[in-house]
Image 1 (cartoon, rainbow, N blue to C red):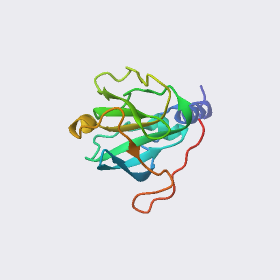
Image 2 (cartoon, one colour):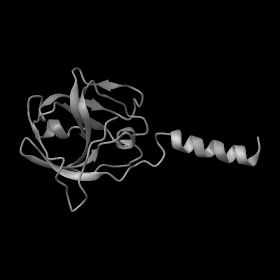
Image 3 (tube, rainbow, N blue to C red):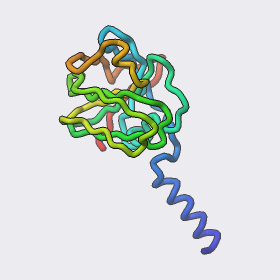
Length: 159
């Protein structure tokens, strides 16, 4: 293998590795869940969906990540390269919590699927929903057009 072939291989691997460039600089919005405020990054495109909260050593209290999709679908998540224990809520298009699951870094390849099609998923520190007595049927209030702390408008790309 020549040096040029080797360099090209490194470039190709860099662009096909979903962990490359994580974490992504996502926009943030304010969310209200059961009367509790939460600042959430919005993962709204393929790259931010793939990166999620991977490669982060901590998630501050009352912070999270909202995964937004253009249509309802069975959503699947895993903990590969994620160091933080998380809870995930799957939401319908109106923001109603359909179900909540806990995820742990010790099982990085275990898949967590929504039982029914969902439009959004909200990840927070593990136990956040339970600590606040939030459960399925509760509503998550957010405006994807709004932003927190002056960041630019969030959007959703089809993926």
